Length: 163
Image 1: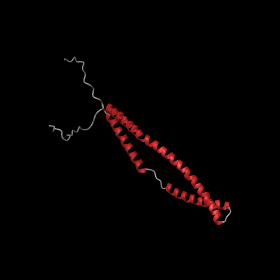
Image 2: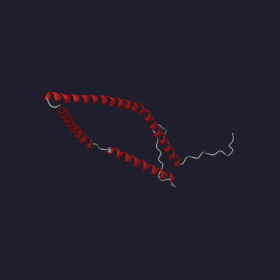
Image 3: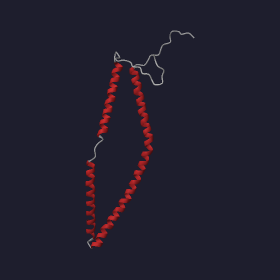
Image 4: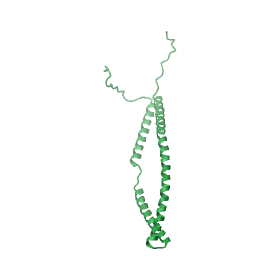
């Protein structure tokens, strides 16, 4: 078979084309990772939602039981101390208010100790800055009129020696 002279050597992709391809591949990779995360998290989220609903139902019944216990305690105070019934309920309410105040103060102290993930935020910012700088260097190299530097060749382990 003879060549007609119309055969052309395919053009090698430029640096800009390679960077565009890399960007598209990274985008595809990230989308795939997000889809994988969704597939993994949907069943867990469903189970978590059902579990939260069941915990809410249990909490409702526990609160009703506590109300009955508080009423029983108020009636016990009335009966054992021979006080008017209203005073038994007032004493029980006072005890509950003191317990609530203690829990509230402990909770306030613990909430004030909460800090944001400062190191993680700083590391994320450094990573984002590094990526932006690398992209800027890549764009500058892609649009440069002259490529500077030297080409280094490395011999891979197990490959024949070059002369």
